[in-house]
Image 1 (spheres, rainbow, N blue to C red):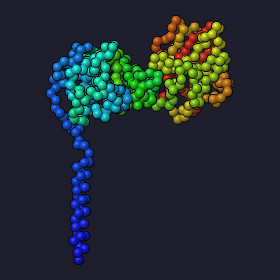
Image 2 (cartoon, helix red, strand yellow; image 1 turned 120 degrees about the vertical axis):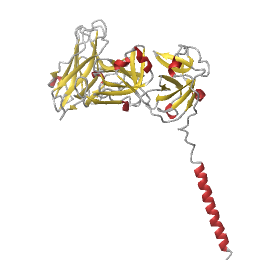
Image 3 (cartoon, rainbow, N blue to C red; image 1 turned 180 degrees about the vertical axis):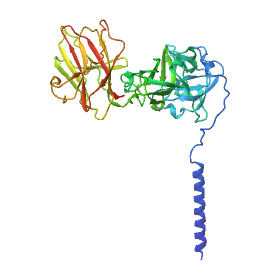
Image 4 (cartoon, rainbow, N blue to C red; image 1 turned 90 degrees about the vertical axis):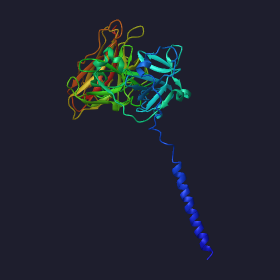
Length: 443
């Protein structure tokens, strides 16, 4: 009979331990959620007022601004900086830290204590940062000091963009939109920048500018970092809206998207075409500079001489190049660059697009052909080739062309085809040609 009180005591003790343990678990489940907390610091200046601060001297007084983050570094298109805006304007904030989006994601409200910081201007674009470097440009706020200046407030907040046209941004009054999130309507990529990567590889160019236009020919450049996660994605055809941060570099209008969800093209293009499906594209960016073009299933063939097409780069441009110039006597050159087999079965309204530049033109030629019976091996001369009569850059006798000539050729062939680019030079005909961004699309 004495056993019963002992068992009863043990049961009560276990229940107590379980209850106590449950309380402890509830108490220490995790840190409190402060995403809705706003310290409500007293704001003493708007961003527009801050931008007028004299540059080159530390900001005096206890100036505090507030704004919403409208661009962070999550996609890699921006690095070590964010953009905040209020109702009066926007400003880049330079922060010497990576993965800023963990603390300062798009939609978070921030307060910035500006005393001791500096206002800068990069190509006409306002910035807020730390001590100027030896060039006079403001530097990034050191990682260890960020919390001294930047105070987090509530998150998330809805970020709303103004909807504008390119023409609106060409006006003097457009300065108020610098570093603000905007949406541009009735816009499309120009023909030569449809169906190509948003940016060159970072090893080629730190950033790439692609031309966009409206139906009146007004232009703006889409600026994308080579480190952006969406760098290799291909630009769409069509026409529609694009959202991003508006900036300027000197007189050039620029836009930077946060990721490709900012691009919404569902309308027909200005010429009435749909922009269509991209069936084939090549930009040569994956190759080594000055090496012979060697891509899977491509043919780089020397019919006469030993010259072949090689990869070239200049600034952010990448291309295949060919010339008979060089050596004591110009080489006799007949060379072919031929695409892999491209299956067009069941497709219609087909268009081939590519771009060229010529340099020191003195009579050598570059032509584009199509074949339905070249097997991909042996001498291409033995196959049947049809001249596409494409527009090729020409006439630059004392230098290189500064602008690309874009060829748009409608293809009538169906089934499997190959496109060839044939160069002929020598006997003092030594023109250099550059060939880039080859693609086939449906209209």
